[in-house]
Amino acid sequence: MPTFTREQLAAYIDDVLSENECAQVEQALRQSDGLRSQLRDVMAERDRGEHSIGGIWRRQRLTCPTREQLGSYLLQVLESSQQEYMEFHLRTIGCAYCLANLADLQVQQNESLNHAQNRRRRFFESSAGLVGRSQHGNL
Image (tube, rainbow, N blue to C red; front, side, top):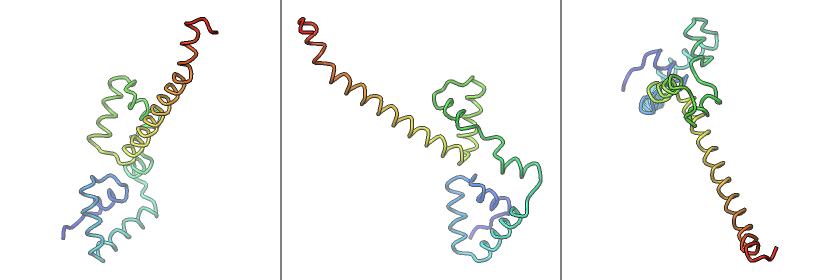
């Protein structure tokens, strides 16, 4: 069974591990009372409050973009330097929190697009007969 450092367990708590790493930690937690005890210790330390700059930075997600910025990234309307940072944060760092927000925004965007297309289709279908009659002088 692999061993995990306190930093890896903290990253597990923060949900910043890759899917593979997260699965490894979860499997090990199921099999080891000692590792579960170590995880509880790490959580208790956090509850007491880690007041280092790094701890505050991670908890407050100071490097994470806002939801509005993620929406702008999705639409590709950010300046190139901001777009590059978003790409780095999402693809290289793999921030699970931001990836989840981005996935939610993509679903909303697709739903809005489908809704708009259906509305246009219904409008066109309801107007098609009127256009034909106006061309023949029936209106």
